[in-house]
Length: 76
Image (tube, rainbow, N blue to C red; front, top):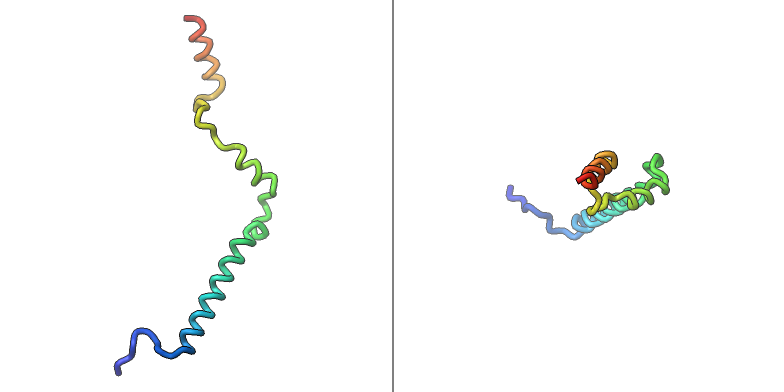
Protein backbone atom coordinates (compact mmCIF):
# COMPACT_ATOMS: atom_id res chain seq x y z
CA UNK A 1 0.00 0.00 0.00
CA UNK A 2 1.09 3.49 -0.72
CA UNK A 3 0.72 5.69 2.40
CA UNK A 4 1.48 9.41 2.29
CA UNK A 5 4.15 10.73 4.64
CA UNK A 6 1.83 13.40 6.06
CA UNK A 7 -1.91 13.01 6.68
CA UNK A 8 -4.28 14.97 4.47
CA UNK A 9 -7.38 15.06 6.68
CA UNK A 10 -8.15 18.14 8.76
CA UNK A 11 -8.97 16.28 11.97
CA UNK A 12 -5.44 14.92 12.26
CA UNK A 13 -3.91 18.36 11.70
CA UNK A 14 -6.24 19.89 14.30
CA UNK A 15 -5.33 17.20 16.81
CA UNK A 16 -1.63 17.73 16.15
CA UNK A 17 -2.06 21.49 16.60
CA UNK A 18 -3.90 21.06 19.89
CA UNK A 19 -1.24 18.65 21.18
CA UNK A 20 1.51 21.09 20.16
CA UNK A 21 -0.22 24.00 21.90
CA UNK A 22 -0.72 21.97 25.08
CA UNK A 23 2.94 20.96 25.13
CA UNK A 24 3.98 24.58 24.55
CA UNK A 25 1.72 25.71 27.40
CA UNK A 26 3.19 23.12 29.76
CA UNK A 27 6.74 24.16 28.86
CA UNK A 28 5.95 27.85 29.39
CA UNK A 29 4.22 27.22 32.71
CA UNK A 30 7.19 25.15 33.95
CA UNK A 31 9.55 27.94 32.97
CA UNK A 32 7.45 30.52 34.82
CA UNK A 33 7.08 28.32 37.90
CA UNK A 34 10.82 27.75 38.19
CA UNK A 35 10.99 29.92 41.29
CA UNK A 36 8.36 27.77 43.01
CA UNK A 37 10.06 24.55 42.01
CA UNK A 38 13.43 25.64 43.45
CA UNK A 39 12.61 27.09 46.89
CA UNK A 40 16.20 26.87 48.19
CA UNK A 41 17.04 30.07 46.30
CA UNK A 42 15.45 33.04 48.02
CA UNK A 43 14.81 36.45 46.45
CA UNK A 44 17.77 37.93 48.36
CA UNK A 45 20.17 35.46 46.76
CA UNK A 46 18.93 36.35 43.28
CA UNK A 47 19.36 40.08 43.87
CA UNK A 48 22.90 39.63 45.25
CA UNK A 49 23.88 37.61 42.20
CA UNK A 50 23.72 40.66 39.94
CA UNK A 51 25.66 42.88 42.32
CA UNK A 52 28.55 40.44 42.72
CA UNK A 53 29.59 40.40 39.11
CA UNK A 54 33.34 40.62 38.73
CA UNK A 55 34.55 44.02 37.65
CA UNK A 56 36.81 44.03 34.61
CA UNK A 57 39.02 46.75 36.06
CA UNK A 58 39.77 44.89 39.26
CA UNK A 59 42.93 42.89 39.47
CA UNK A 60 42.70 39.12 39.69
CA UNK A 61 45.37 39.10 42.40
CA UNK A 62 44.42 38.61 46.05
CA UNK A 63 44.48 41.77 48.18
CA UNK A 64 47.54 40.62 50.15
CA UNK A 65 49.62 40.15 47.01
CA UNK A 66 48.41 43.45 45.58
CA UNK A 67 49.42 45.23 48.81
CA UNK A 68 52.87 43.63 48.63
CA UNK A 69 53.31 44.86 45.05
CA UNK A 70 52.33 48.37 46.09
CA UNK A 71 54.82 48.30 48.97
CA UNK A 72 57.53 47.04 46.61
CA UNK A 73 56.83 49.86 44.15
CA UNK A 74 57.04 52.46 46.93
CA UNK A 75 60.45 51.15 48.04
CA UNK A 76 61.99 51.70 44.61
